[in-house]
Image 1 (cartoon, one colour):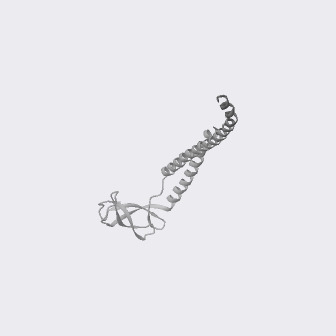
Image 2 (cartoon, rainbow, N blue to C red):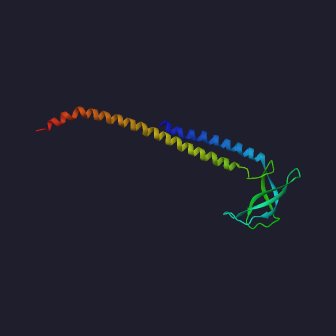
Length: 159
């Protein structure tokens, strides 16, 4: 009972805090390595993806003054020469936005909840296993006792 009461909360807290701390380190690292730039849309591909976006070639000027070109997804029917915001890494390559703190919190809660469920399932499985072993032992004892008692009882009713 103590394991069932203390196990899931302790497992949830430790796993959730560990996952949150790890995710926050990722947030900080990605935030330090990525920044947003404004780029001019040079050309677009003909195809449109299922979420209403299309691949496009964009051009921007880095902080050091060098001109860069890359491809990204933009909203369908975005006109050529439109300005778009995109994320780039330190090398100037187009990348995804950095993970945010809300995602880190969500990861912590999700991992903590999964750990609590896992701990409760472990306690339940251990309980079921011990109960199964005790039942087998008890049934074996009943069987041995019946082997002793049954001949005495059956002899009474023979005529």
